Length: 305
Image (tube, rainbow, N blue to C red):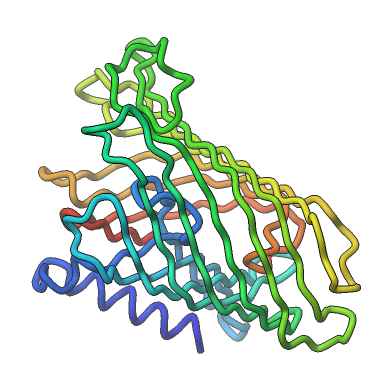
């Protein structure tokens, strides 16, 4: 039910994107609300319907609507809904969330040399596999700095694109933060309780051949590593304190519109580890995905099929 409703919303957003700009520019579609908006991974949807067998789904998608004027570049506030469903793996995932997210850049870089950027979220979540209902919250922070040139000597600066010779361009984003999960309804008494986690993450993007007119913007490699550690829990069924999650994606862009607002890619993805905030249990899998990005200035809508 949830995946069908979300697909309808995604199709609605995509089909109306260019005919109702003033309304649709406040929407964003992405994989989740756990990162800075400009570096958020696109959503993806995969569907398989074998003859005389049950349908298989793989959905990682989040839909948000900006409550603030898009000209406010220092803060955003978005109510959102997320759905994460995967029946193609050994341990099925079926998890949805609804809540509100905010991104706040403390300082204006025209006046300061750097600024922390805070990513907040408060949401109600439902794990349909483990039968958990919970309130989840997170606070993440990453630093940004006043832009310098693309000299590779600045490669260590977070959220700053640099050139590595004529072959590569590189940017990375570190996060530190805190997460909470307050389970209010569980199938088992031993699952009931609170969990508080410390959080660390590093994501990066490497694009290839940025100065080659034929290959520029064609290939990119994305890496994302996340680490969570339970610093306190009252739920009695918790057996693992540390949770690692890693995903990598190598993409080939075979279509880009003249205004660069429409991009179509094919990507090879690998995921391993576990993400308790989305009901993804410890396992590994590969996926080949067709990825479509629709950008509506100044907001961006990302859909991956």
